Image (cartoon, rainbow, N blue to C red; front, top):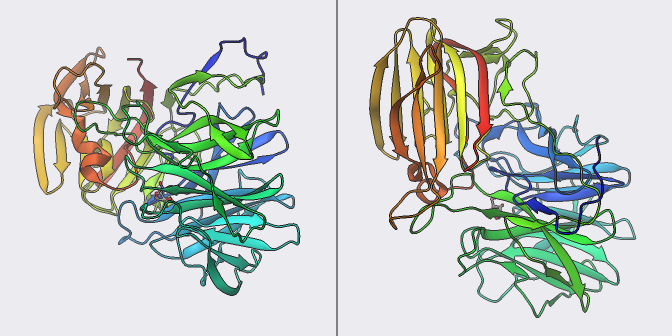
Length: 505
Ligand code: 6LW
């Protein structure tokens, strides 16, 4: 790993530290290494795992649940069902990950010696009811699993067995909605219980209480919520669902989720809930969250060089890169780079992106403005390049031999927006997302999604420019964000390459 020199005074970093649909971050430290896991809902593989040495630059090293034996997402799994809110911890020389599969297995626990994988088969916790499970160990070796609500179980993490009845710990501010995302820590003389409350929308926040034992009683912090942007015009909204960690120098930090709305009123966010970082100081043994901003002071330790992320995936490798995800299931035979050397071959299962079992391979949109391109060979079928929020909200440019068409689905409405003749051979499909920066009209959407093809000299032929609000969480609902990718809706479609390029505004 290349390490740059200590940042100059005045050096800054940008937030989010993990952009795109990466919510509910949970973080742990093992020596000089940091690892972070996020929710993944209906997508397979599940639970992306990231590595960093500086808390600022993160690289995805795998997905904890990458085998069908670990993750069941049946076709009836709704969008925003599946895997919610993991907790990742390093304890006793190994990594522990606990997560809720709200669509099949309930709470399940996995272990690994290398967080890049392989992770174990699931250990089920049939008696632990409640989302957002946390793990903490006390000095006597007891393992405490605390869930949304907020209540706590003593468990055997090796078997999933529970002991005794759950106990109610603390539910945050009286009357506040959705006390959830508990994390329990021993810091100094106290046990701290960190929670989210107010719901994951604009009222989201983080509160904390402390006690002398892991089971309470807990005394709420007088300054609660210790993090919230509710009622502000801050560019980062919905801040909540945090987890604490110590930096390399012993200072404290919080990772948490937030969103970046764009456009006019009421503001639409299209990238899902993203992972942000904030400094934490301590006053009277209570944590105080420092300024949260899109550009913030760099931590005072040497920062890694940011990894250079290639624009192109050429599909030259036999395995797919870890950032590729598919709704619910990805049978290797339907999505393979082993059939035609250097190409990705997709075999259609569902007939369109409306189908929960569509063959779709995508990556998260991570930048408000970006360009995606793909070279598709539709000679044996029909398929193309799509931006997807869920089955009911997607735009796509779809190729068949001799022509392309732009399709849009928004809720119950389906539209063929444009058709255009092409040659019979492979065709370059392109979608550009351009974020709204200057709001000249309160009704202006968050971005424009332009769909089209490139002609032989590379000139973009735009066939449709659609308002991006219809592919936003404020319209579609749910917990995810945009995913951009390749699909087949009939026969077999081969793709030679896929480009994703961040555009500066
Ligand atoms: C998650 C809950 C939340 O379980 O949203 O923002 C839910 N917080 O803690 C889904 O991500």
